[in-house]
Image (tube, rainbow, N blue to C red; front, side, top):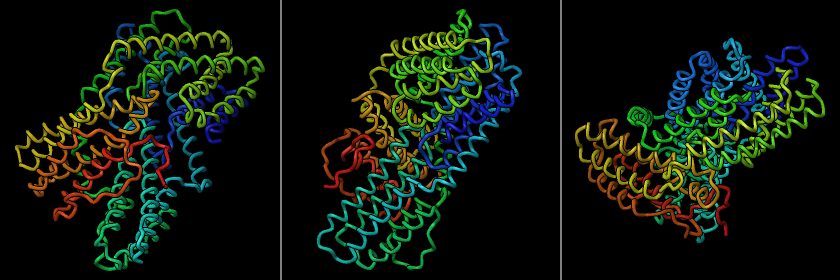
Length: 604
């Protein structure tokens, strides 16, 4: 409903007022927000809109490139594409923003009606305000919060486990399976959102910390030396936390005094505390020292090459609406959006279907009001289409774009417009398949296990350098190698997610593993950034553990998962204890059942 109203209503109002140019630009802006939206908490959605909209709106200024000589225009857009490819590897928000900026740039360069460029940019900002207002209304009216419900269910299951332990029940199996199942469901929902995101997200990092803390709490409650009194107090507190999770507010201050479970405190901190100073220092050090790795640079270079060729085709071919060639390349070739080959084929198929739908709508009536309603109706199908396939998503985005252009350019007949779009899409698809896929063997046959093993080796070297107090320059070099390897592995997986099985399923299994390795690296960075030596002997032992994991593959031989007690978990140094917990989580992922999201955990 929000997608349909957000795109269709501005167009309808503008058509009734005789200001279709205004309706077109606002409608296109709202359509971009609807296409880029992901299943995530409202706070993250608002943050994405208001980071994406200003960046995308500023891309209208690239319309000035159309007044440059052709060679200069191609060089400028190739450089812009390379920069977008680099920036998009650092966060989901920046990835969405750079993709929309490349789309807006193609439209501004190809549509003469875009000049002067500041009115469309202003209308794009208005579209962001309009879409945000609709989302705010939804946030107030739609009380269902899947993330909160999953968190509350996990806390409630842990409370039942703690209560069973406090009561001295002989068989904790049922309570254990329920708790572990709830943790797994929360983790799978987080992993699904992470897989659909266009880059790393803060939400997944937070939810992964919650899963790790919940798993360690479950392990502590199942330990043979668990005290009944502490378990009873933990059960009461966990029920308070579950109620707080439903309401979205922190629980009341604790009144149970000293002697409470440390793992329960860590879980509450992971859920409700903001960024701790150590975490903030860890993140800032990582951002400062994580230079683009070879895979990110290669992906950006492929994007730049295909974009340059697309603009050469746009300027050289006598094809009306040829700006759809670079637009297609931007949609298919953004390096963190999945398979280049698969997306190119699906986009061509979806464009043909969408063009046919647009022609059918126009054959029924060319009335502006009818067309506005049709645009809103097709846009309302976008959320469903996105969840099914990229071809269906393209089928639902093609008709609104074509109908909007037909409304503001009445001399352009929809049938030639459809033919132009199909031709331009096929040209863009050929460019991406040949220049972005076929000539690059490494893209077709990624070595995930080999890359991850090398990343773990670099991570172990990094941890040893910190433990032994090596020179800061040597530590910095080791840190950069470590993060570059992990970034390359993550980007490879992100591109594999859209592939058909077995590649896509393998990527889903590896996504949380690489995330866990990144958290281990962040813990080491936190110890290094605060210039603390921590516990050198334990750090060295943990580095040896990391090396041992480099030879372990993701396995699928554990029908029921059991929470594992962290090695070195009782170390007096809190930073090293957290590092040990994260490493334990990584070890558990490499030896537990790893199935794609959506597979329910075994409750038998």
